[in-house]
Length: 189
Length: 189
DNA sequence: GTCTATACCACGATAGAC
DNA sequence: GTCTATCGTGGTATAGAC
Image: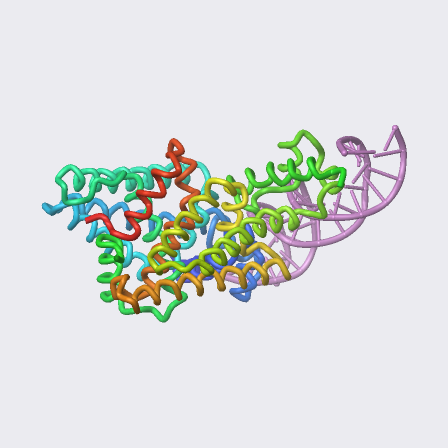
């Protein structure tokens, strides 16, 4: 496709604006202005604003889904699986930062098939994570807390990592992984 | 003021809609329709859409600020202060759920003085929390992890509690506090 | 205090010249 | 592939009758 590069450019600029102001607060005219063109010209490369959002979100959602599949295929303990999931979240935060903010903040503005597909992927991901935690409690590797509290606490932290990673001086990823695993698994006291 | 009750009703309905769809995706016509009135009639009670957002957010922001002040005045250890902060977050989640979603999702759509005041309160809150963690590390009550990782992990969890609390069957608050303190402080393994 | 009517503007998107 | 011009819709907000 001839417009491949230009389209990527548009998606990139849109992702920055969506991250700053949110999907609904960004107009096609805003995106065009940031690219030095007119809003009408955008439609030679994309079908509309919704496509921009769906492109950004679905790429990242697929990464999470395939990461979870890889983890589930391993012959490893629940704790090891959770450690891998933490590392996957960190890797995605670093390597797919463009779409991550859109996924976290604006997924509810997806429409029709995209929305349905996203919600299904998200629920499946959470169910798999929950099962791993339950297996860990059953085998007494994990303390007998309410699994929902554990799931929620880990996912909250991992899902908002992107907000914080950019703000600070971009810690070395391997140090971040070590500290994050330690804090989430072993607590702080 | 004669319109006090009606104004509260409007703020309440707006908070529900903002929570569902986000500030920018909710129109004055939406809010009016949910109240069985016309959009124009809203302006007899409020000055505009911005006032609705600011009312919701500022009330909750004040709760956090005054909660932090109370904690800082105590003669207690850093760990005890953190436990109190966790409990404050849970109490606010339960008692101020209306404004909490707006504060978390839509604060960046505040304007002018409200935005400045909010950002100042938020930064001050985070700085105080960070200092408590650092004091705990210095006194060796808290493990020597990067304080920023600890701060971020706790705040991420506590700030998104509202998303999760409503979804589940509204656990008993005291049980929630116990499990949450345990998970955040002592980890899961 | 709510209504109808409307002003005024920005939105997403399209048509067609170049 | 970008432009100008424009369409239809829906946004916040106001004026004035009831």
